[in-house]
Length: 449
Image (cartoon, rainbow, N blue to C red; front, side, top):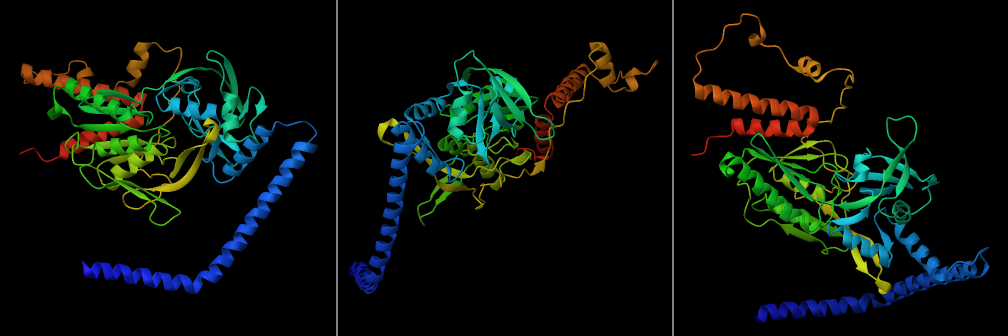
């Protein structure tokens, strides 16, 4: 005990001596900095008064102050901004899973409004809006020069009303207009399905329903398969998932990890970061996972992908993710508004920063364009063109009478699963590829003791 007290006392004394020796220069330096700040604030005050008194039209004082705050924050990065009381309330509603609008997540890139991703089942998705599209006009009015929140406000409106947005898309030579009817956006955070013996979990957003919805969908799939022993593995589909709540990304990752770091954050001040670790327990007991991402997978999606990839818990398939690896802190302000300020960066368990780089998949798989279909072809002609010929199709082919009834039943079940996979390949090539990986990993897995 004495040694500990003495060590603490020695440190205190040494600190006092050091402070005494450099106090003069430090005080002088701080004084100069304070003087500079005050001069800049005086300059701001002069400009503010000149604008208010001499601008060609009268501008409400609150609008000038809001514009000044927004200008300061948006000059920092695309994700820092000021939220009015109404915008702050709208954001809180969105995290609960229901709101009005088009159903797109957007950001600002070099002054242009860029679509991060359309949300599943929303008016924007049904209208064919794609991740990476740029929105240049709303109802004929240009968005260039507006801050992000102002552009978003232009896209809001009464449910049932029409909006026409002008899109610039890579690979399309000319801008084009898209008509969308605004609607209530009800986000179902997780949708589940079973393909063969694989459970597919489509996670569309990270709101306060995500983890519970994922567990419910997984349990339903396992029940449909007749028990966990019949589950080959899980496909987690995070394509076009723009992110959301950090705590939900952590809990989703934790569901499939037994131990280790999930994500860490680091801010400007040394030691101000946080680390989030997994708790014991894997909901699928180590069975294979394939995780799907694309350019619309951002933020919380990248946290999950990075954590499962670094721990070699999942094979990541698809295309490179969006690359939003910054942390925004919501700071409530007087007047019921809030400030959204970038305060840190995310890092995956191996120490990789996601920011501006994204997550690179282990296996790059592009989603091919669907081939054109002859509108005049009958369903029978389409089926015949796609179906491969076999020995059984030849006239006079010898039948196989060596199979028992049970063997025939198993063969027909396997054939039905293969046809289901072939159909899925036409519907969603990336997802079919992910399911095939699960089947391959299960085929070479050692038998259970």
